[in-house]
Length: 600
Image 1 (tube, rainbow, N blue to C red):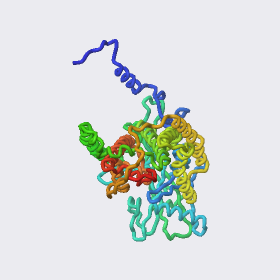
Image 2: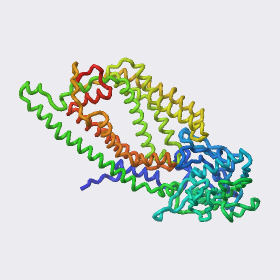
Image 3: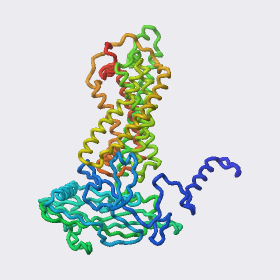
Image 4: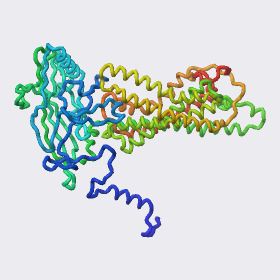
């Protein structure tokens, strides 16, 4: 049965639901909607209808070129392609710079709903007798051999190359190759398999023509023009024997590996427009993401992680309900004082478990830095799940992570100071300085050395000097002072009180068996957490090294929560097993965390 409320006083949840539905309902004024910064839609219309709210010119931007066979990305200007005569370079945020993105204007300019056929962009001529031209041509050949990919952007949306793969599926790649190579044995590498005319041995074929098709969706009101919902292209190769009158027909543009004399490459493009009523502006990225067959593997990852968590939870529950209950019942049933003095099992080391470690300074510093990274990861993934850090918002994920790490210096200093004070430490200045500089200094030193190598190779992944200065300013001017503030409040608090007193005389360390030594313990304690995240780790590393988009932050956030639970339960199990075998102090001693004078 359910009680009815008066019509004049609806429940609060109904009011909230009504407000949400009203806010989400489509209205006549779409311009009043809420959009994330930098992700607001742009309206386009024909040349004769353009206005301040409706643009006619469509700009195409070019990003860095990269390859799955090389770790070195390069800027578009590093290659001898057609360059834009004028154009404003869009500003890049911190995350884009750290990831090596270099977005620049291109010479490809379109007008909305105005089709072009085989339009000439520029012509590049190389004389192999000249050292400079030969160097440019060799760099172009090397990039085709390593399958370097263009990355073009239209209306903050990648221009994709869609092609059929196995099982009748269609894959949309947010990039397309510069060209391809036929080996001296006649083997077609990479994209050379798409055209049967690519058959000359020891020859490069360059894609000097693109057929671009732009899809748009007309806004409901009809007076605000249209919004772009997709941009696709198909790379092609034409020799263009008549440069003054290009017709995009004839044999492909081949460059023999042993070619000499004059080599002329003409770059052309064709563009067409098509209305698509099925794709909305808000869901225009879906066709790219849906072509990546990862969803079923992600569910397998979740199920795999849940099985591990259930297994560990069962073991922890068994220990709590059976072993600890039996031990406590045994202690309660002791009648004589003589029996009470004969301790056994995990209670044998209760007077030594909270003895201050020998490396208490380092342990407290690592605990503080770990707290900082843990909170940063949690908050970043939470915002990513809400959609604020989607692939459309370029560089937002890295920017958010760096800013959060800088602002979370206070928890790091507080945690490090509290634990260091509980260990009986008195060198609070050293503790604060190490918390501020040890872990970040190691990361920055590694980052700086790699940046020098990338700078020497001329890669776009190298960070400009100004960005390095900005990172150092964030570190020294914001993170370090916040760490000092957190440490100040941490040292002002009383030391953490332990539930049992520490014995003055340490227990003797018994002889250790192989499976209770540190290395097997590290392996056993690391396999289970790794088993929870290895599938997600594969996709994350694949997005970094294979230049694919990572967008399933909901799965990642769930796996992160499962990982935290798994690490906690694995720690409980390992600690309990060591305590039962009187191994806890021996393990701490082997790790160098107990005083040198400990004799067990």
